[in-house]
Length: 360
Ligand code: COA
Ligand code: ZN
Image 1 (cartoon, helix red, strand yellow):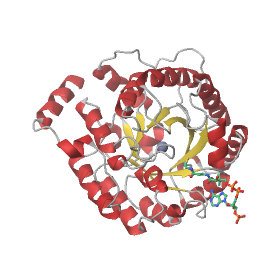
Image 2 (cartoon, helix red, strand yellow):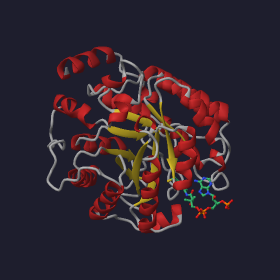
Image 3 (tube, helix red, strand yellow):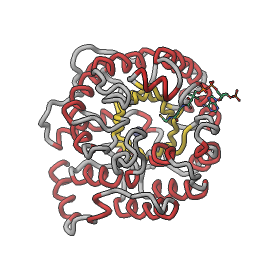
Image 4 (cartoon, helix red, strand yellow):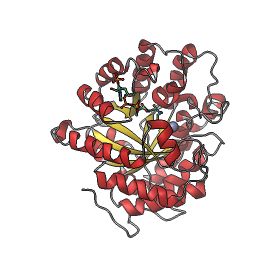
């Protein structure tokens, strides 16, 4: 059972912490699997923040045109070579429902052959967990929407049924020896706003985060699926949930639908969050806003973190080069990103060195 605390836990820093204070607490926030499972020897424990590429799942699930399997793998390999520690490579949903992921098995198998990469996949139910477990996926991102209406629309069941299912998944995973057991992450979709219901009370986020913890997940992820969040709401929601969950890691998944994505990241960093999803070129979108931008842009996220002296392990130049793979496969899709547009500052190396010097 996870340790549940009701008092404010010590790992929630106060507002206005300096970057070096954040660095001190960073490693405490990393889930053990990022340090042991991510066997990118000599690098994994140098990271202050773990970033996870989700463009291949959250981005591609919107596209009806199939992204060729070999091109998905080229993208995954190139990003892993740039130092990306984790990639959500696919989704174990029924292929009839989302044909884009008909190649889930092959994509996972070949991703698992990449040294040091933590292979992540989305699962909507027990059947998805069984498929992922059979292949050896490292981290399973389960989905439950805090908004009842969105949960009914997305996974066709009540939230209580989703929790009952995650309990079955936890029991299944406990039959696997600990050294080979995947991590199970309880995702809270539409947690900071819902396209159907509008505002989502923070108490509801706490309620379902606690239900996840009691069901035995390893980590909880709070997701702003429709991009309604602002930094003040992020602070309120993350503080409350992190205080309730005590030592259980809480990660963040933001969309940049209304341009507040990186501001929300900063607010979550201030709360002590050290795991963030993002997608290359901001691929992705929102079913309620046809022309909206997608997930926060991975390149810009890594640039912000690195500029602040928080090590991601990602080589920015090499990461930027991976955009060409997306561009050649989705020629009519806008690729977002301020870093790609402006380039690294001329004096970036010296700025980085001075920030690292202060932080170290
Ligand atoms: N993988 C493959 N097949 C699956 C599956 C899975 N994870 N889950 C269910 N199926 C199959 C069942 O075996 C059944 O097959 P059959 O018709 O040959 O017997 C069929 O799909 C229907 O199963 P059922 O349990 O009734 O599912 P459903 O139709 O109620 O759908 C979900 C429930 C959760 C599978 C579906 O709503 C879903 O995948 N939602 C996620 C949508 C998504 O990707 N959202 C974006 C990410 S958050
Ligand atoms: Zn998303």
